[in-house]
Length: 107
Length: 125
Image (tube, rainbow over all chains, first blue to last red; front, side, top):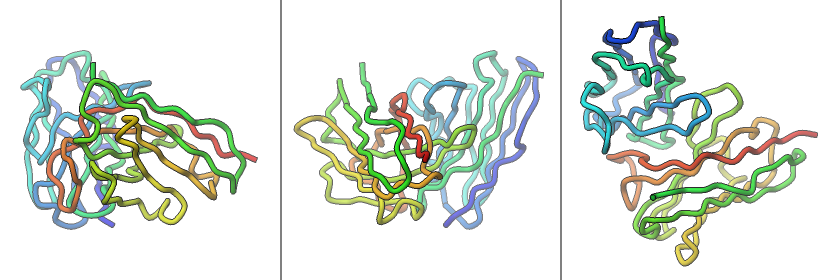
């Protein structure tokens, strides 16, 4: 099973700042990685698929990069609604594992 | 609008069975692969199972393999998860989710772009 490790566990920033979230895979997943956002009491929402493609309706301030084992989700110019938990998920091999999540909180 | 609505959750004793349903609307259900994903209280997401658009391909997490079965009825626009031999650690909020693809193989491009609000399963004696 491929293990995804997300860092940091918690990230405290202020609105308007830039957030950089990391996801590292225990073995190469090529570009088969997705990012999801989850707000309290809500279902997850697809942000990024195939490492760097924004899903429909996702603002341009969200961007994804990386390949192989190291991936980054970057949020530029944080908006109040961006404070949430973010998960990466690999789709390179079974099972389609998730990372443990990064909580982005308001400083 | 495109919607997924889960049902069938509840409180069940260890070792018993439960069947979850996920009703789809406002899209061509038979054209998409579908997943179940769960989230234990206060924990992260765990992928559970996937089924192809026509039901011919299925895959499961090791933690549920042999106990859970995913199926679908395209004539009813409904996805199912039959859960047998339930354990305490199966307690979670269960989401169904639509994949952007019709068949999810490995490696798989795309992602899960539509999610329901979830149904809660509590396994307790």
